[in-house]
Image (tube, rainbow, N blue to C red; front, side):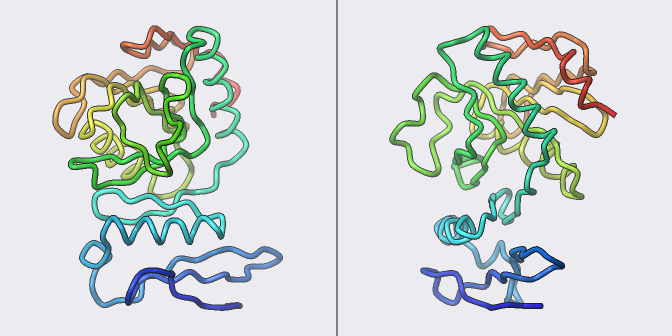
Length: 225
C-alpha cells in the first residue's frame, strides 16, 4: 500500500519522487522517475546531490554514474564481514592508512561529474577530515567494492565503476567478486580504463600495487560458494 508521496525538496520540477511503501511487515522506499524524458536529460550533478541527501533520510543510498542515478543495495552480513576482514589485513600492515568503510562519497569519472560511495576507500589516516559528503579523489590510494546479488552488479561494479575510478586517476580498484569467488586488482589507470587487470581466486596472495599491502585471501573462502 502506498503511504504517501512527496517531491524531492530543493529541485524545481524534480522528476524524481520518493515513496515510502508498505511491503508485508516492512516499509521500503521506492524511487520513481516521473518525466517523459530520461533522467540523464533532466538531472544535473547538483540536483542529484539534493536528491541523494533527501534519500539518505529514508536510509536509501544513491550513486550517480555515467549520467544515471542508481540505488545501492543494502549490504548483507557476509558483505560486511568481508570488509571487516579487509580492514584487519590493512591495519596489520599499514597502521598509517585507513580503510574507510563508512560510505564516504567520492567525486568520480571524467571532470568529476560522477558520484560514488565505494564499499571501502584506502587513504592516509585522517584524509577525509573536512572534505564533506563528496570528497575529491586526489590522495586516495585505492577503492574497494564487494559485489552484491542484485541484477545490476555486472554493469555497475565490473564495468561502470572501473571506468569511473580510472577516469579520476585512482591508482587501484580492488573488486571482491562473490559470484565466482575471485579478487580482481585493477591498476595503472589511463583515461577511462585500467591497463593492468589481475584476477585471482580466493586463497591466493593478492598485492595492492603501490600500497605495500599483500592480502592473504584464505580468509575469504568461508564466504565462498
